Image (cartoon, rainbow, N blue to C red; front, side, top):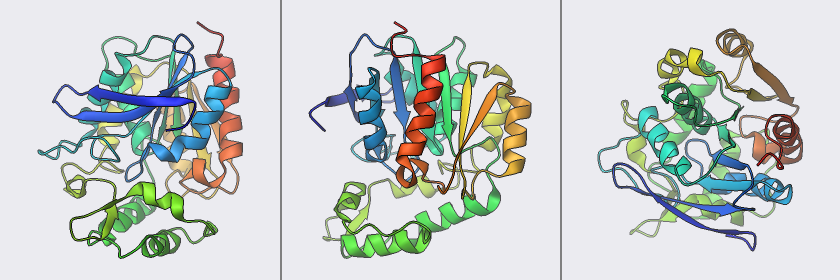
Length: 288
């Protein structure tokens, strides 16, 4: 939490508690932020502060099985479960609403929009994710998430693992922020702050498991859409962009040069500038 935000707790339809934070004027247009698989809401901290400063009401929450939110005993982590959770979040806010989702969060938002019988949002931002993620990048994500299930002896070890996965990103001098993405187990070791049951084949909440579900509802996604692509992304390729524009023709493309899959962390200023420009056109802070 910061001085500009307050805690959020929402109960899902199947009884889990979703944890998050909200900030900005309650009667302003709302931006709901959905992080990627294996991340937490803290990945949006910088962008959230910028949106609040521009006058938006911002909701930023941990997906089920991540961060401070509840874990599903049944490993219910399919896109349908995550979309239902998003609908639970949206019951507490008024329109207009923009959904901003990175990777898993973008897929969740897209499916929720396309599968809802009535409109639930007014704009959608997909952050480095399409309906057909590049296979090589998707395999790298899966390999990384499976590689460290035995935890780490220190934050330093976790930072080493991230650097090995993401060598193009300069290793930060201060790695203390990484601690928010780790939890201490009963054995004293540090584990990623997400439920390892998500890696079960029927539950895995990252590409390509969601692809067929997303394509099945694409014709129902008619609201303004912005696709933000990292210039060094191994998840969004030209084939994926072409399919996205064919199935969702109103999609706009915004490239963030020098950013990999973790765009908000790699080039937050550039990402936020593109996001704000899109929101200013589609859902200005003075809209309500």
